[in-house]
Amino acid sequence: MTRIRPLVKKLVHSQVKVFVKIGVSPNTLTLTGLVIAFLVPLTTYYVGPFFGALVILLSAYFDVIDGEVARISGKKTLFGAFLDSTIDRIEDSLYLLSLVIAGVNSVLVLVLLVASFLISYTRARAEALHLKMEGIGLIERAERILLITIALALAEVSLTTTYIIVIALIVLSIITVLQRILYVYNSMK
Image (tube, rainbow, N blue to C red; front, side, top):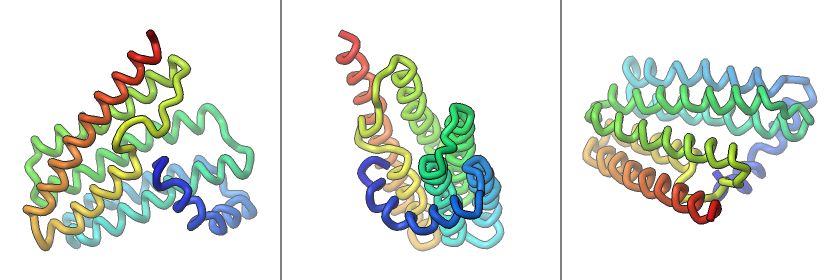
């Protein structure tokens, strides 16, 4: 998200101000994103992968908005950060489940899920050691979601292209985990 964040912040700034003005809590937005994420596999199954990808974008929108609302409204809390991080993992699982529904090999998707979770885990553990991890590694959550969305949308047109994106995501995720481990190792010397 670090590479995409400035653009996204600019795009949603006016909408964030509306949510702050009407008093919507960041946790409500987080939970809204989760509810929408549960619709991703259902939409993929019943309507098709392209529409499932559109639902991912809607769910991800609330994931972007919740943090910005928390920051701007001054409602950042430790529980909110914990809730957001936990919900993110559930959403990631639902997005990846949709790839299986779209026809991607479940073992590949499982490997991607584990690699994605390891990226988040290494960040959480490093931050528990008081190391700043934002921007460390090739691919963060926003980039993964964007590529998963593209892979899912293309599944109807070319499952081969979807496979290529999934394999690229696995490789990039593993490299990111290794980069983070190395970063923590070098920081702890």
